[in-house]
Length: 134
Image (cartoon, rainbow, N blue to C red):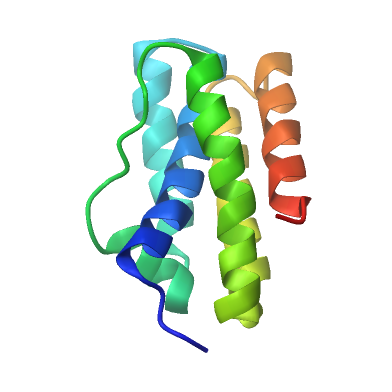
């Protein structure tokens, strides 16, 4: 297993935090967003090894705030790149990363009155990005 560079860790973090942000924004509402971010932080805290280090060390990713489409066009490729980085440098952590991201996304979606159709659609796109060969 090779150590990840700061840039690679940021890619993993951008994908993971961005995925949570996308799901959270699929169904707007300030109180919902607070509940959702607490739910997501639990899933991220359960990570271990390389994935935990990537998600907890260094700066938070800078996500665009203007449009969901802009965020999605940054986050989905980051998820695919993150999987490719892990495949190359730490293959044993690929499934852990996928699991953490999808668990966080599911927890965010379910944190406020169950999973809405818009949230389910975003999670499907996140799942596809995590499965795509980069």
